[in-house]
Structures are given as C-alpha cells and as structure tokens.
Length: 88
Image (cartoon, rainbow, N blue to C red; front, side, top):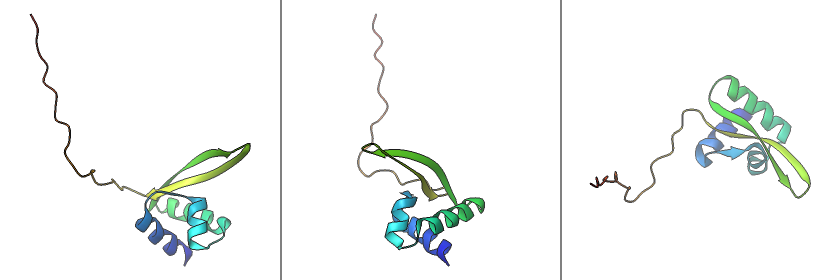
C-alpha cells in the first residue's frame, strides 16, 4: 500500500515536500497527495501548504512530517542563563 510506503519514508527522512516524496519513492504526485490526505485524516502526519518560486514559475505543494515529532536537541554545550549585573 502506498500510504505505508510514504509513512515509512517520512519516518526515515523527516519533514519533506510532497514533490520530494514523489520523486524519491517513484509514486505519481497525484497518488502521493491522495495518500497524504488519508494520513492527515488519520492524524498520523501533519501537513501545511507551501508556495515557492523557481524564477517566475509558482510551485504549490505540501510540507509533511510525522505528527507529534519533536526533533532531538542538537549536540554540544548549551548557553546557560545570563547573570544580570545590578549597577548603583
């Protein structure tokens, strides 16, 4: 089933555009969008519409990711709270 293939691709690669999913999986864009609508209705993914331009050409699409996914914190030291210095 294509929805399972798309869902596993999103789990593996994270947030992607529908155009990127279609080209990576070899599924037609129309079928990808139908599967994404089904996954959104089941609340397995979240999606938002995006518009970008290639020169003068407008490209509309959907950006999708797994629902409830919070990316892990970046490795390395984190900035601590700053100390406020009171001046008289």
